[in-house]
Structure formats: C-alpha cells, structure tokens
Length: 391
Image 1 (cartoon, rainbow, N blue to C red):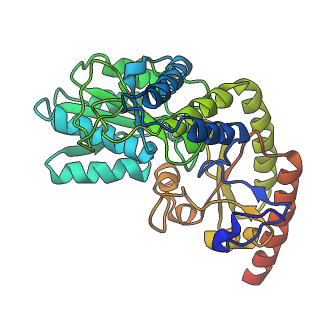
Image 2: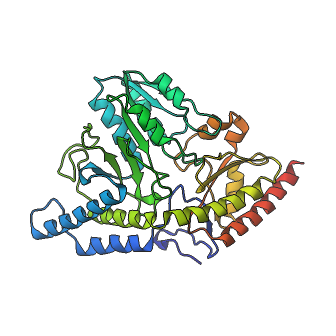
Image 3: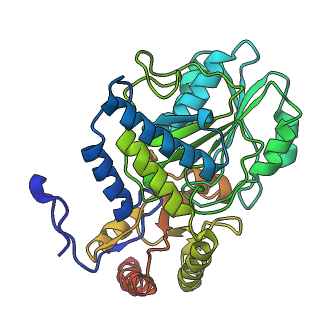
C-alpha cells in the first residue's frame, strides 16, 4: 500500500492507484523535492539579510531566477514570484486596472476562464469597471473578428487563458496579441497555467503571464507572474523587502529553486511527451465515443492532456466516487470551479445537460497504457451497472 503522510491519519491508497487528475495538480517530482529539501537545509539565511548566510541564499535565488528567465525567454526583472496562479491572476488584473484606470475601465475576457479570473473581475466591476465577453466559435476558439469589434480605445485589459482548464481548448494567443498591438494602451494578460510545461507556445505579444509550479510537478505554494519590464502594477501585498517591489514578503528561496528545477524538467522532451499523451487520449476518446449518452466535450483544438466528457446516465459525482472505489481518480469540472454546471462546457455545447454532467480526465507522460486500460475496463463496468438501473 502507498502511505499518504499518516501522521494525520490520512488513509492509505492502493499500489494500483490510477491518477487521472493531473490538471488539478501534479505529483511532485523527486528531483524537485530533493532540491527543495537540500536548499531548505543548507541555505538557511533570509535572502534579505546582509550577513554571509543571507548573501549565499540570495546568490542561489538569483541563479534560480536566471534559469527560469532563460527557460521562459524573459528577463529576470520581469519575474514576480507569487504563491501560485490564483495570486498571479489577481495581481495581474487588479494590479493593472488599479494602476492604469485613468486610461479606461473596459475589460475583455471569455466564458472559458478560471475562477481566479472571474473573482478579481467581479471585484473590479464593483469599482466601476465594465466587462464584456468575447465570442467563441464551435470549437471554443476566440473569434478574432469579435475581438476587433468589441475592443475600443477605452479597453484597458484583455485576459484570455492559453488553455482552458476544463476542456483543454487552446486559444489563438499569438493572433490575439497581434491585434492588441494596434492598441498600445491596452494590456494583454494570459493565464498560462495549463499550457506551460505541456506545449510550445509563444508569448511574444503578451504583457502579463501567470503560471504555477504545482501544475508542472513542482511544489504547491510557488508560482509567478511575468510582467514585461515597461509595465507598472499596483501591488496586492505591501510592506517589506522582497525580490521585487510588486510583492512584499520574505522570498521563499527553497521554493524558488525547486520551481526552477520543476520548470527545467517539465520542458525536457516536450514534443515526445505530447505525442505519447496524444496516443492515450485517442485511445480513451475512441472507446468512450462508442457509449450511448456519452459525449466528448473537448474539441479538435483541445490539447491531449485534457479530455472532457459528459455521461448523461449518472451524476458526475456518482461516477467520480464509483471510480474512486477502484482507486481511479478523475475530476468534475476544474478543482477550483464552483456551481453545478460547467460554464466552459455550456459555452461550447449550449446544452445544460452536458454542462451539468461534465467530467474531466487529465493525462500525463507519467500515465501508463496499463492505467488507461484499467480505467476503460472499470468505466465499462460502472456504466453498464448504472445504465441498467435506469431502464
């Protein structure tokens, strides 16, 4: 049996556990964990301290930052460390809008965003900002003509996730960025949480980029916001020296070093990993398409790491817990989603039943073919049982 830190009486998991919820969070890579533990043990100084222990820790932090900047193709000064993508998204949206509100109060986004985008947007609406939603086509892709139609000289910010966390739909980030170049007073924010470390994507025309370590086999509690150097932000957290003026607090250099390691490992052999995951996705999709009342919600634009389906003969929670009894772990909607209906699935399908029965299967290069076979066998057993009960 696999023991899950039993000090708090967390129950044991079977050796044959099948984890298919990688988009919610990934298991920490052993090398990443080793880096975190070594830095925590050997570099005990506060990086803001002036003595040699602090200076030594600061040097390590700077090395890690240089590596992250090199891997992402950005400048070291453009990296703001955060606790993860939710904080990065909040800092990007609130920071831009509060800093530059004299330029305009219009925000454009989509119906395919994470809750950590809608949360700060709701807050900004209470401050008088106006929000409009870009149209998407049948595959979930932002319509460029909708962007050109809705954007005005008063539009301050456009925020679009590179990859939707529920359906895996990849948005035309480069095309959107090119359109926004015509509007120098408008900023472009991209939530890249579900894309970095999974696919190659250019952020050349993007002003602000959010990402998180725990989606790329890193440790929870560390992420960053990439902010192009000519942009200012109103901080969310004030007071105390840190790595930048935009986010106060003692720099967590063990987490920063482990973040650099996670990113480097995630970007290795990216195309090979993606091709392998595509074969797993295809196998699951082809099998599930044969079932009556099972619909594939992911589209041809979805990355292979995420497969969203609807199973109409049972509640999503019923399927989730039935699979859980067999040590198979999937998700309903995204881990941070609220409400009974998937907004993303409804935005694509316009069908309430499919949106209410949304299930997300998320894959990794660590997923084995045997695990997929086991999942498909168990799915058939559960589906057949509940389908017969409905008759």
